[in-house]
Length: 298
Image (cartoon, rainbow, N blue to C red):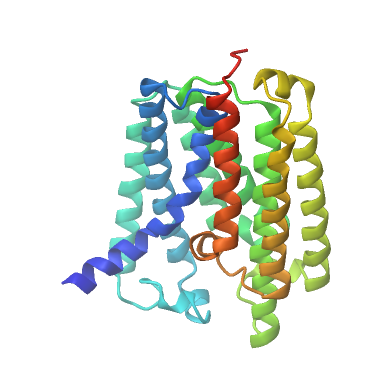
């Protein structure tokens, strides 16, 4: 019985819910992390995205059963392995996506449109858009932007163009790393798991990752040295946080291009101590800058 339940838990991919913490970004950077009402709304927003994401993951697995059976790791997923009925999985997916929309109705109102857009966009991804090179990683990256937008609406915080831009660049950089693993797998097995991989090769991905890493770091340096940002946070030492960003970006490049461990970016966050220390150090430094030295409400 325990194994049976575990298969259905795996179907929902709860380990991927860490991505939905991006909804917390506007609350955190907006200096309202101690606002109880705003925090409750953002937590509800987080739950909505977890439900929506799980529903979409099931649809994606449902569509990719045959391809996943050929993958060395994905073949163990509940649907690909035959441990969960496709029909029942499809019904569970609908319940989770509908629950996401219903829960979002308890928020400020505009979030419903964002969640509906997120679900429609990702369903389009699952039903064919993921097979178009470049468009596939752009859709994935835009999903993170929608998370930030929904988080800002839930917290009642206006999201800056900096946060939108940096979120998109970071997500695009990570998505390229994931595609690099697909390229490696294709070369090792002489078999294309994703149709979109036909539009990529290792040289293109490597150059694109280096380019995106450069753009991401330069954009972040512009952000932390921007006069309006330093004035807003009343701290001229925000640029110090770039140390954690540069280290984190270089570490991810190293894991992808040197150690070839980019199969699951989420697992890297869970398992790589170096990345964890970079993220924790960056969050703690910003927490001190915003909540210790004070925050100037625009």
